[in-house]
Image (cartoon, rainbow, N blue to C red; front, top):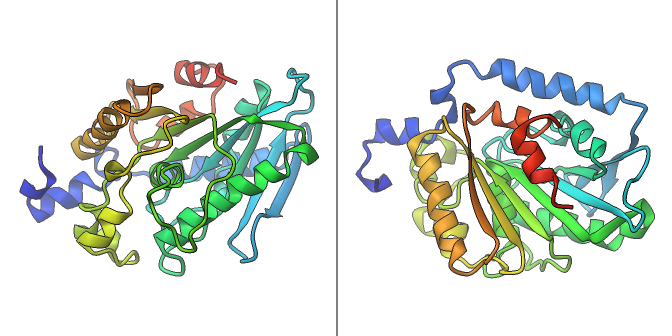
Length: 289
């Protein structure tokens, strides 16, 4: 299916993940409530609002397990939240930390600024800057930078795919000096051109031309970063098409590219499985420290 053949109404629906769900508020409320519980969990070593840059948007939270099963240093999972580049924050995306720390990972969740105050190139810069900061400070927190993994959901998957693609220019020409071992990209968008023609674009201000320059579909990612491209069975057709197209393109250059469908899930409840240590997809993804 070519998105250009869709009517305006169909395009809006295809790029509205909630069209497959109905009421998404119970899921967003769960994200927030569970994140608050995690942030109050005294069994974790928690470092809140660590600054990785100069602006007020540039901060992250770091969760460390109470004990380490990795004598050579903790693997690290860095999470970048979704929200169509204009909603949410690290504060309501702490909820995966409990599961990931339970299997021995350090877990970080970052803020990157939101539209319209911030633009997408600035967000990409901040993702690269956050990863570089974590790399530079790994000795202070006891994780093994050689085992850094990144995970993004929705817009967060897009931003990480951009961050690991050297050809995508960000706001200030930032470079990624600390390469993650693997990127787990969940329910992402990799071609922003159709987004530029929908309601989502109002705070983003993308043209067709600028959208293409910020689309990982048209750039090579770092071939040494393994890719797990994950999507829910009950995504819209366009979201599924985008994941499949990005996986097909990436597999020609990146040897370790996996395309994974999570059965019985949609765009919002797939993240519940990413935060449950007994979920099959969690087991599959977490056993690669």
